[in-house]
Image 1 (cartoon, rainbow, N blue to C red):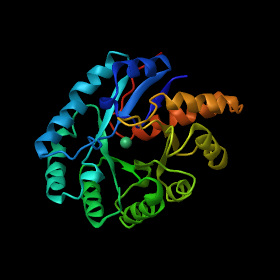
Image 2: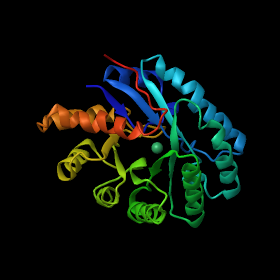
Image 3: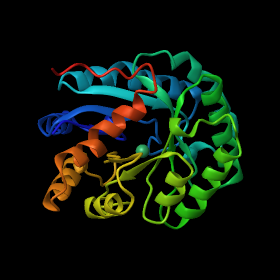
Image 4: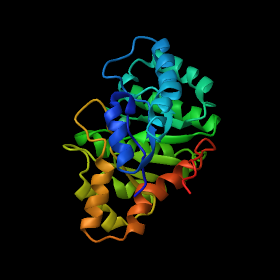
Length: 270
Ligand SMILES: [Zn+2]
């Protein structure tokens, strides 16, 4: 089955991973900007990072027949340096016309601090001003519910936000309903340890249906599994779900959401 991984940090993965994804039917990946594993020292580091995401990584992906799309921002973990965050936000418009850029992301909260909220809202302003899609990271573990609520409240207070143009990622059982009920898209991250497993994601689909839901691997430098979406496909098949339902989650839904950006053009496979 062809599928799309809507959230994966391929700059931290090898060509072996690209090959495995391609063999399993992955036709496109979407790579949000994220933390480098250390705080970057200056805005010039972000300029280089954005060049990597918009120039080099699409070429690496294309060697394996995979289309590479990306999102730009400064991650919430670096938002405590508000001065640097503002310099990065001012830099981003230079890159928005690059052909693989889908929008602003992954923005959000990490420890739910005041500076994080400030930088989050300035990213939202940028997205509104340039009519960009938004991809949102919600915090981990004990901070998740409160952080998700804070994010939803900030977005819902702004009447300019078109909710069908926002994807809220890393939802779990206790946050998915709030996200969907408010009219946003929701992403479930399939991780070996924290976040969702393929079985929990399948349970959530069985409970809420496929509307505005997708799954991703969020593969990065840490313990993660870039082929987690195929694991989800297998789990859904094992439970006897029809191919049309599975395809909706792993292909049709990402296509529907991303197609709201004029930059998302999938190569024809006819
Ligand atoms: Zn991520």
